[in-house]
Image (cartoon, rainbow, N blue to C red; front, top):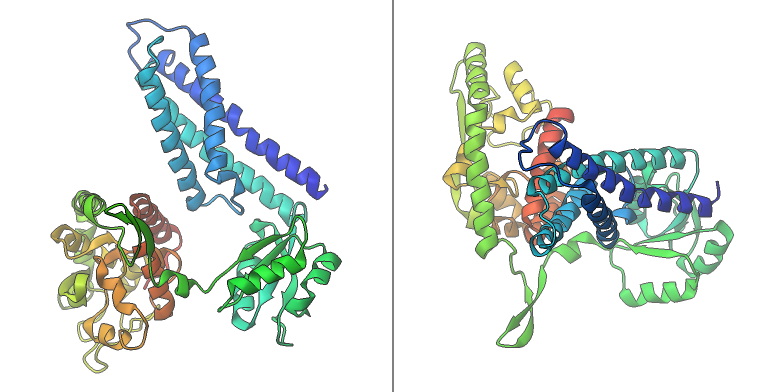
Length: 462
């Protein structure tokens, strides 16, 4: 299978969304009027009118998926891609409901519309997962794989190469690197210096160039692109993430004068109220739901060891204010008598048997729902640290205190990306600041769902 044939196959698979959406909407019609689950006293409308509308909706949704970049995403079908599908379906739903409202010549069943959105979302998720699975198996056989080189230096090349190598579902094969230094990364041969990029692209049939310079110059990157001058080659710049996320930039307006706001939080005003409302509703419902589990864990803790069931500890939250955090006790009562405040390790010998289990599945964190209900914390946000560690980190890590511009959380962007327990505080800070400056209501929902997935199926403890 040639690269051109593979691309044609992918286009056909993407276009298959149109009949998939159409069939999902058609299934909702039969579910509404022919399943016997719903009242049809007003009679069954002619299906022809619905069929024409369903086909138009399917074409519209395909266009929105294309505009939203759903078809440009590579790799396995993940929660990220699922949320992209859901968000696009939500946008399409708004357009659909508006059309139904203004299109008065035919009275469409609103229940059919709601059912159609639900059925189609599930069907599309399954279909997209199948497509990704199929493409992944083709990539494993070397079909449709794009050849790439990494242009950079030292650790940046190594990090980029490791990430791509560990994710073969991306369909990218790194053939080597272009570096100024003579040293080569294990498994990634050095093909030459950045100046030889044009010849390297020709000799190796490269389609993607990853630019991974910690301190790259936009002028230098443009010079390399012009030097390469190769049609069909895609340049993907991987900048120093910290230099970009360290300050948030938003375009705004003041008295008709365009301004650039730096450091303006997205979690304010109505958005902040919406986040607080989500915290209140979900924490209250969560406390009620997990109450029996917490009662059982409390009994097991009491039976295994003497001491308090609930562990209280001072943490630093919003605006640097301290508060008392609540957890189910997972360690011996005298765990820090001799050592003082220290980091907990993944398999901490101070943990009890019950404690090790509840730490593995993060059950010990559930009492923090009470902290959220009180307003001390949020469901999603940077993890709160103890005052002794905050005093240490704020003088060592640039912009560390930016984490305290929002409420700390039970879970966060750093945690669902594997930065839990013993990890680099510098890396965790980068992810925390990125979350703060890119917050959205849907991002919080995504993090919450991923947290549940990680706790149930990829438990590590922290």
